[in-house]
Length: 155
Picture 1 (cartoon, one colour):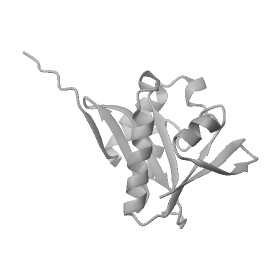
Picture 2 (picture 1 turned 90 degrees about the vertical axis):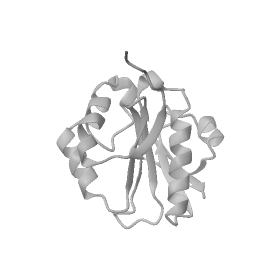
Picture 3 (picture 1 turned 60 degrees about the horizontal axis):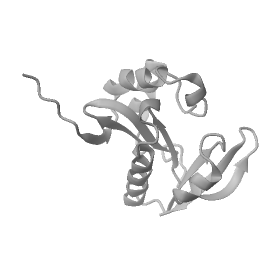
């Protein structure tokens, strides 16, 4: 008899997880994932990024052992004081609070690491300005080259 264990976990992504991340990215419809361009779905590229990190944070969100999303705090390794938040949640789990949980954990992680705020660049077709405000993000600028709105969250 097999027992099903439904549980939610968050853990750092390791180089060995590059295949899981690549598979998650590949299974997303192009229209859905069009605003996520931090990584391609190339497993080797993802593995190199995970192996090269020092302070940057890459964490996976798992439901019953399956990767259902991941978030990142990047920029520390490049010398920035304010980390950039990025997230991708599997389309099947969109709207299920995973993104809000990822942001909350990222805020806590950044605060514990000594950051006083975090930054996110979000296209208005991805998350509306009203939705970003509900998440506690404050508009601080625009990125003309992408159309992204630049948001910050004070920690």
